[in-house]
Amino acid sequence: MPSTSPLFHFDDRYARDLPGLYEPWRAAVVPTPSLLILNRALAAELGLDADALTTPEAVDILVGNRVVEGSTPLAMAYAGHQFGGYSPRLGDGRALLLGEIVDAQGHRRDLHLKGSGRTPFARGGDGKAAVGPMLREYVVSEAMHALGIPTTRALAVVATGEEIARDTLLPGAVLVRVAASHLRVGSFEFAAAFDAERGNLDLLRRLADHAIARHAPVAAHAAHPYLALYEHVVAAQAALVARWMLVGFVHGVMNTDNTTISGETIDYGPCAFMDRHDPATVFSSIDRQGRYAYGNQPRILQWNLARLAEALLPLFDENEERAVAAATPVLEGFGARYLAAWQSGMRAKLGLRPETAGTDDDAPDPTESELAATLVDGVPHLLATQQVDHTLFFRRLSGAARGNDAAVRSLFADPDAFDAWAPGWRALLPKTAHERLAVADAMDRVNPIYIPRNQRVEHALAAAAEGRLEPLHALLGAITQPFDERAGLEEYAEPAPAGSDPYRTFCGT
Ligand code: AMP
Ligand code: MG
Image (cartoon, rainbow, N blue to C red; front, side, top):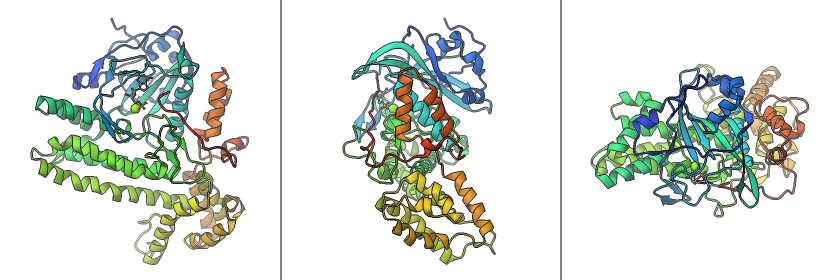
């Protein structure tokens, strides 16, 4: 029987709305759960008492050992295209949705466990997760959040006290994840196939209505609510992938089951931040073809959104031809949406005025506008050919806006290339020194100095595996205030060591 707890007030709307799209399930009981890390700021956001979450009773709930009233733990069913190939039945193999809580702002958030034991979707997997990868998700998702990028969050990592078998025996852990929801493109693919077998639209319609209520309530009042939902997802995902590109984030495993309906980044597996700018950057050891390389991410996202459209077609129109005709312009609109988001983000990074800035008198003239567009579009090629560190280029460029080129110039393989590029950029900055200083400060507010550099993350995780959590907390201290340069944090702003081997991450751990 579920017990009552004053700590958590769960709801189970997913469970109530979406029978057919989950299996009720319980977490594997773990021997000696202990809290490795707790996100106090997030706890407060959720209206949870952080001190109370550290008690053994609360940790038992967080790890799934104890189920409280209002919570219906379940493993979600979903399908997915993985590396382009369709898998009709993926689902939460090692994860559970505990339920939803309504946060301090009134937003409904999922509380979800990863590493909580085998479920009916586990196939060959052991249902477990190791401490290292769960802390890694904690670090990278919190870095993304601090960068202002929509993402799932990490509330806690709980060590289970078990050893799990990977290449070697590793300590096990459960990640407690918070998300606007865990609906994915793959959820819709599953529902569409489920209904197709039964010759109805029952599950797909319930899922779409649930998604509208949670993520696009205005779509309910549109002339075509399901098409409006689709448009909402296309817009949210175009904006999201633009943010990834601007910050140099490589997701690593952009399968349709890892593409959300909410527009949040989800499933931090083989992800990492790029050091030197290179569109071919791949970190995942299993992505041998480079399908999910940095430079491919926008078009892969659009491909995933095409799979979403296919799943939704029967809701757009009973006539397939008309349904396709309705979906096509929305899907094709992805490119323009992405480009607009990327270009305006890139302008801000470079300290250029937004395209629509100013009053009529003050509006940039057409030539300035064209020059700025050309400059913006040329930046990736410049950085790639000059092997420039992506993060440090933008951060140090503010120094050049203040009149000191040396730091950014030194990042270029051939510093003369910076000298050739800089005058065109400088010509687009304001004319007075006072205004240029204001621009430099604004650049520092959008260009991070501290990102989770691969070597720093590895160092922190290796120490944590030996029971020393201090480097992890120090790293989190740096990356959760990514824009504020602080004395003593120099090591977190260093680029990858020159000549280091390409960084590799391993999936499914
Ligand atoms: P991911 O790459 O984390 O998105 O996972 C892809 C699929 O594999 C999902 O259905 C997961 O639930 C499942 N999966 C990954 N690792 C395990 C594991 N250790 N045990 C069971 N299922 C797993
Ligand atoms: Mg996944």
